[in-house]
Every structure is written in C-alpha cells, then in structure tokens.
Image (tube, rainbow over the protein chains, first blue to last red):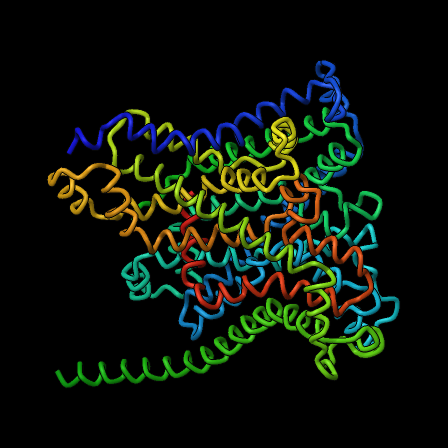
Length: 292
Length: 298
C-alpha cells in the first residue's frame, strides 16, 4: 500500500500541473502587481521605476478615496443584510411547507451573470418605462426619482440589485449549516420549555457561529471586489458617485493607460482583502468554537 | 390517589386549552411567515417574468403601454433578430465551447490534486493544499494587469486560450475545496484492495476513484459551468475581436448597438439566461450542494 501510494513521480505528475497553473496565473501576478505599482508604465512601452510615487499619490487621490468609501459602504450594507438572510433561513428551518422550493426560488438570480442582472435592473430602474417608476406613478407619486442618475440614490439602487443577486446564496449557506444541527439538541431545549426565538438565539446561532464568520468574510471581501454589475449598470457614474475600488483600478489601467497607478490600486485591493480576512479570523478566533 | 387523578386531569385540561391558544396564534403567526416568504419569492422571480414579457413586446408597446401589461401578440421575431442580426448565435457558441473546455480542464486537474492530497502519502500535502485554498481569497483584479501583460507577451491576447487558462486557474481552488469534502468521506477499502491486487496508481485513479466520485464531479461541473458562462472581466479585458467574444461581453456589444430596442435587448438577455435556467431546473439539488459545500467549509 505505502509503496504504491508514496510514489514521488506520480505525486509530482498529479500535483504539479495544477500548481503550475495557479502559480503562474494567480500567485506570480499578484506579486507583480505590487512591483508594477512602483513603475510609471503605459502598458506597452518601457517601464520607468518611480519608487513609491504611485502609492504616495494614492494617499492624496480624492477620487480613489471616494471609490474606497463606496466599496466600504457596500461592504457594510452587505454585512448588515446578513442579519435578514439569517432570519429568513431560521424561519425556513422551522416547520415551513415547501421550504426547499422557496430556497431554490430565492437562489435563481444568483445563477445569472452580473451583466444580465445589470442590464435587467437598468430596465427596472428606467425613469419612464421601468416597473418601479411606473408603479410609483400609478399610485400617485409625482417627481419619481431617477434612481441610477441621482448621485445620492445610485449606491442604494445598486445595492438593491446586489441583494436580489446574493440573498439566495447566503440563505443556502445558512440553511445548510442549520441542517447540520442535531435534532436532539433542539428537542431537548423544547422539553425544557424554550420558545422558538430562544432556541434560535441561544442554541442555533452559537452552533453555526463558524459559518456566520465565513459569510461575514464573504460579504465584506466580496463587496470590496465588486465590479461587473456596477461597471455595466452605471460605469461608476453619475460623476463618480458609484465608483468602487475595482472599477477605479480598471479605468486607470485600461481606459487611462496608467498601468503603474492601476497596479498600485490593485495591490491596495489585495492587501485590504487579505488584512480584513485575517482580522476577522483573528477577532473571532478567541471565542470558543462550539463542537457538536 | 383520586385526588391526584383529579389534579392530573386539571393539568391536562389546562394544557389542552393552552395548546389550543398557541395553535390559534400559531396559525396567524405561520400565516404571516408564509406571507413574508411569498413576498420575497415574488421579489426574486417577478423581474425575470417581466423580462420575459418585454422580450416579446414591440417598442410601441414598451413605450406606449403599461409595463405590467402582457404582450399583445408575442413577437418571437425579437429572438430571431437577436440571434442572427446581433450575432448572438456566435457568442452563444463561443460561450458553450470555452465553458466546456475550461470545465473539463479544471475538474480533471482538481481531481488529480485532490486524489494526491487525500490518498497519497507525502510530506508537503498540507502545505500544497494551503496554497490552493489561499487562492480563494485573491481578488481577480489584483492579478489582472500582470495577466494581461503576460498573455500579451505570449501573443495570447485575443486568443481564447487566455480566458480558458484564467478560468481554470481561478476556479481550481473552489473546485478542489468541493471535491475534498467528498474525498474525505469516501471509504478507502476498494482502493486498498486494488493496491493489494497490484493495480497501478493511474488505474486506481481513473478506473476506481474517478467513477466513485461522479456525484461530486457533477456538482463541481455544474458550479464551474455557471461561473464560466457568466464570467465577464477576463473576456472583456483579453478578447477584442468579435469572433472570440462570449455571451456576457457579446450582449454588452449588442445592447450598445440596439440601445432603444427593448424587445431585442430582452430577447438577448433571455437567450443568455435560458441555458442556466434549464440547468437549474434539471440540477437544482447539485447546484445547492455545490454552493453549500463550497462555502461552509471555508
């Protein structure tokens, strides 16, 4: 057994192709991004080393900090919305007929491309012929909002589309975790006279705290990476009101051809994602993870 | 004893009335819950129903009538127009073959790695697994510029190989994670017996392990298919000529040209999501499984 299953050549043959792919296409590039951030480079011509100039410019670039603020706002909204998804999942875990079907219906938007979702919501938000403003006009609202063209509303309008896209995803994750809780624990609590809210709060939530932690990381890091939907829906507009870190980076590199500065933004995004993941794991690690 | 019996009877009576009270309030409560759950379901579904409706409308209906109205007579020619005039047929075909090639490559490479990590004995298996898992946290954007430069230098810009390789790399971590859970629970007895019989590792992998893992393979295949089918930024960045564009970028092009033709836009969007809806109807359990397995264990 050991001899056949310890053959070094076979192990190398099985592992190295995939390892090569992720090294060349993920790990090497992210290191290069940090390095390119030290360059003045238009993407085609020669690179000139400029030291930390790009990173220093980043610190004083108001447009960059605006887009970072929008990304962090989306991350905060997404994290808060987890509470709602959790409540829905707890309800679905109770004696609800058709809960499997409901979960699947909730999931459908998540399976569609962000491009299709963005195009669909562009139509939903259409100031004249979209369903939202038509409904508002029908119930007598005058001066209906121009959702995506109003710089005060645009981020919230986009966030509604994000909820539509991701609600089912988180509900599926929470439901899978809730299903893993042994029935006997819930039964025992019922016999002791606990009501459903107490059971949810005192028994179920602590038992799935590990999964809740994962979803918080997913929500925050996922929001910071957000790109497709916003790029297609508003292109960061109006006037930068919905610009996020990733779309700002993309524009710097592929529209302005400032690849050095774009790389600095991309590297910032990487660092912030890794730091936040590490921070959340660190902050929540002290709480004892409950085994069952 | 009699006294006790009476006491007991009283108790049960109280209990029964109490239970009746709960069940009445319970019914109202449940009714409310169903109402909330139903409203959420409508919120999730109605935009798609509405999309389907306006994909069958003419512009005069879209701009002149209520958006909630049903199409007067379904204009299927919107679909024909999108399919041929908008070269959606070409983008559709590109999406299909690029998705398939990338999925096969990803799932095969991931199965090799997962087999080596869970079944073979070597020193650095945990370290290598860690390398793959960290890949889950890397934002695509942080690798995009060097990737563009890399493919550019290899003359692979505007070549489907670039997006196939990028899809494979960025889907490997998640695919391995989903496979791992299944491999860990899979009994090793059959494989051990095969070793005793003098089977080579390759035969064990291809003829025993791979067939045993078909359920989880189908889960990873469907999850990978959905991700690749919907991918946008790599195609948008690496592909410039129409003949290699996939649906996500293709519909962007199309909508840019037919900005005010709602019917044609709706039809294009419907064409791009119909394969996903069919996959969903046929394989919803696998999809749910994949999503749950891919994140819960993180």
